[in-house]
Structures are given as C-alpha cells and as structure tokens.
Image (tube, rainbow, N blue to C red; front, top):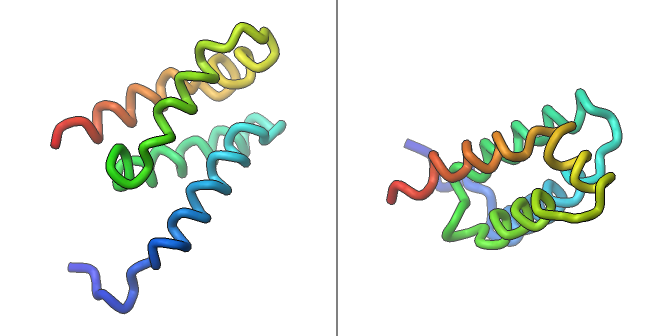
Length: 94
C-alpha cells in the first residue's frame, strides 16, 4: 500500500501530464519519443479517463490528422495506434 506522504500532489500530477503531452508529441528523436510514449502509457493506466480526460481526444486528433507529416509522426513513427489500444485496454474496464 502506498504511503500517503509519498503521493504526488494533484497540481504536480497535472503539470506532469501537460509536460508529457507536449514532449511526447514533439520529440524528434525516434528512440526517445518511443520511451516517452511508454511513460505516457504507464501514467495513463492510472489517470485515464477520470483524471486525464483530454488524453484520448488528443491521441485521436493526431491519429486522424490530414497533415501528412503530423500523421507520420504520430501514427507510424511513434506507433500511437498501439499506445491508444494499450490505454483503452487498461482503463475502460472500470
């Protein structure tokens, strides 16, 4: 069981999620972007959908983009379709 003194405050969690959204979606180096996507997926398993309702719409927006470069970055290079499936499988069971 997690000790209450070791919990991350809600405001700090919000800031972490915002930073993760930004850096995962903009990191130009594929190996780093891949690892950031893994971190995002792990955090999302705890926070989506209740505490992070904006993540799934953000991922879907980037997957559905008509901008070829943006779509390549989000769908093919970082395999966000796999991330989206992972998030959905882990979080919509409650």
